[in-house]
Image (cartoon, rainbow, N blue to C red; front, side, top):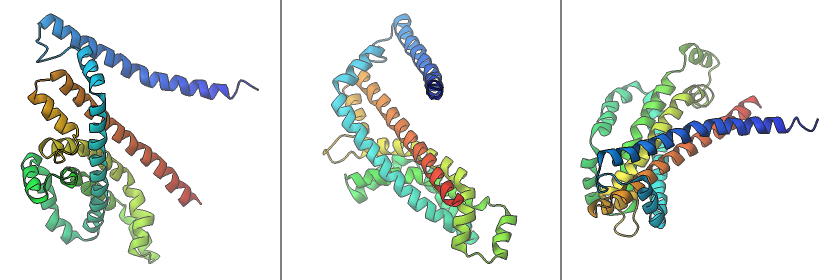
Length: 270
């Protein structure tokens, strides 16, 4: 009787270990190959530093990297939230009004195809070296996946179900909340995950060109500074830090998605 509670715990621990072990093994192999390339190819440390040099520089500049991660991560989160709100509203309008979708969707695609490197200097001219300018860059680069996923998801509702709601004279708002949004959730989650990765890239690119007026240094500003100083090891440490920010944001999105879906299901079941 006393052993039964420990079995689920041991199985959970085993499953976690099985999930972590392959990742750790791949990381170890990549580091070994990295070191082997340097030793066999006689690569200069300015071009490709040793792995231990990257870890050493990351520890030496840990306070700068941590602050840079917080600044870049916060810009990515704020920009992503704005994109989700604005993109959801636009997606709802596009799904309800076909003429609006046909007329404006090409311009939304145009916004996605314009290089952000060309837009960033204009944003600096219009908005200045401010935090909000970096947020604007994040919004521009992450808005399209939200609009596209919300529009596609809301339009994917089966016509038979829409006709059934029409028979019972259900209003547009109730149909949207009870039928179309639940059907669109898988599409929306894919769009938010995609936008989350783009948000981190947008924050780094925006910081790379804009910075924050010398007040604080995000990861983009740190990368530019260390690139000019030819500190390749420190530059690679910042690169891995930016990847960590992206992974954390991706994990937060998944956590919020799972939690939100559970609450949504409980609400409908009740």
